[in-house]
Length: 252
Image (cartoon, rainbow, N blue to C red; front, top):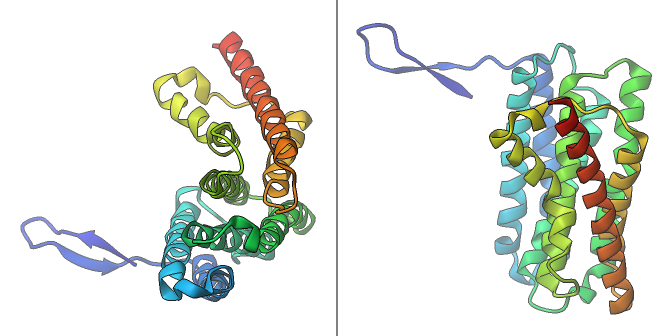
């Protein structure tokens, strides 16, 4: 990585951007996990070959590079990248691999169980990285933010895959993009950027949100049941965000 350096009166030059030990370890793990993304993408859509792998691999390396930059932004002080963050990075690789489903020409049912397995693994690993961070004393602002962004990316990716399959209606976008809409609203309404009180119910609904999206990938799920799950989960998520917005509005 490089950053521009331009001494007064001299042409713009490029100087090396010093990576910390943790960032170097993270970069090595990104290379390893990139191979995982490639392999999973080929399994999901072997017919298109390299075409189907270009998007997943590109998404993963772009997101992984952004994560390394975020370590500097949030002043990551740990010497090592750490196992908790490595697990979160693996979850990011699984999320990126799911985008290979966009290139499928046949029905989603042909790879539905494989997609469900990848998504379910990404969800199950969600609780492990946080538990390990607390147990090992590696709880950091970067780790919490990284984990939250991967959760949001997983919901977004699953909602887009399901919408493109035609199995559910546009209500599925509520499950994938509510968090991004909330963040975007904060740019126009500063009072919405205030910190939220920790609520166990919010975490439960987040799990329900991702679990519902995973279930909707199952090929044998009857269409009426799928629609009921999608609408119910979307309603719960809107209620959760509505409650948070209400409390933020009261405090402004």
